[in-house]
Image (tube, rainbow, N blue to C red; front, side):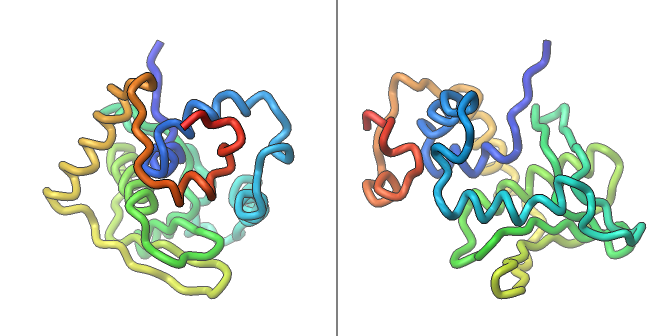
Length: 180
């Protein structure tokens, strides 16, 4: 049986590797128990994508499942404009372009390429203020960093977690369960 890394977990791993473990514990609970306001808003925003009613225009593919055998990734895209060949990842409110956001887009990009789609441009779309942030297609250096992330996830040892940023920990939805 092959196992895939969920694309949505890339951002979580960069935020805090331990959050992946804690997320798996919470998987059996109702999300209302542990989701904060930001996660609730994000889920509501994604409903139109997940339910497939973003647009009736044929040029838009939304919420389709994607995979990459090369990288062992699986997930869904938000929006792919097949006429302009633009990949769009929507976020509720973008205050800063985090590496996790970029790597989610890169993962979707690599999956789409492997599945035979051409991607000429990609962007993050901030819904709250309707702004687009164009992200360059990954160059060789970015590909290496992306591949290192995939490798780090695959070889991560949950017994050797080092807390790096106390401010992140304060804002983490898993903080009450975390021993770090």
